[in-house]
Structure formats: C-alpha cells, structure tokens
Length: 141
Image: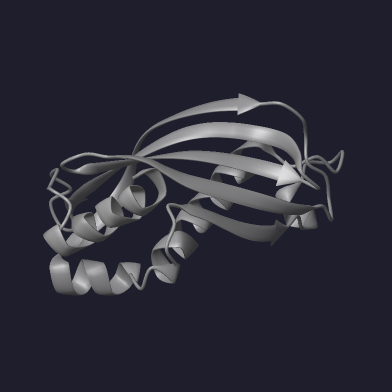
C-alpha cells in the first residue's frame, strides 16, 4: 500500500437499520471506524499489538459529519478514508461513504494517540509517524 487513500466495502445488514430500513445514523460512525482500522491493518499495524507492545491506542478526538443521503438495508457501501494531516499526536482523516459512487456521508475525523492505560495524550510512535508521513509525501510530493 503506497497511498494515503484507502477504500473499504461494507454491506448494510438489517441490524444496521431502523424500522424503516434506513441506516441508523450512529452506524455510519461504526462503518468509518472499521475502515480506519482496516487502513491500519493494511499498513501492517495491529491495534491489539500496538496496545500491548507500544502501550498506545488511537481514540476519536473530534468529528464533523454531513449527512447527504440515506443508505438502506442491503446496500453495498464504499467507505473512503483519506489521510489529510499528521500532527505530533494526532491524525486527521477525511472520510466519505458512497453507494454506487453517490456520496451519502462526508466526515472529518481527528484521532489522537493516547497512552493505553492512562488515556493521556502521547506523540505518535516515531516509526509509525514516519510511515504515515512518507505516505503523504508519496502522494503530495
């Protein structure tokens, strides 16, 4: 993987919807969380190993969402995650959820690196930050 852009597919199950068959709003957050997790995994970072070996986890710091159109039961969605910024102890993503290329949700998600036991802010581990920065450089430089 040589890009700061990542795409992950998810099928909408009945359990993701309300009584009208429309995806319940908080489930979009779950889809985006899973896509960020799969992005890390595709880069070779297992979150459990990061916690156990490096003592760090990533937590959502803030999020902005714009709901454009609803998703429905059985839709196949594409969750796009774009690495936008890397700070000392945070990463900012722009995420989109699409159905057949049609934009449903836009989000800006900032995740912070914290100590796994105290939840106090930490800098992103050097090797990881370097790798993320290289991804940004490959695309933008």
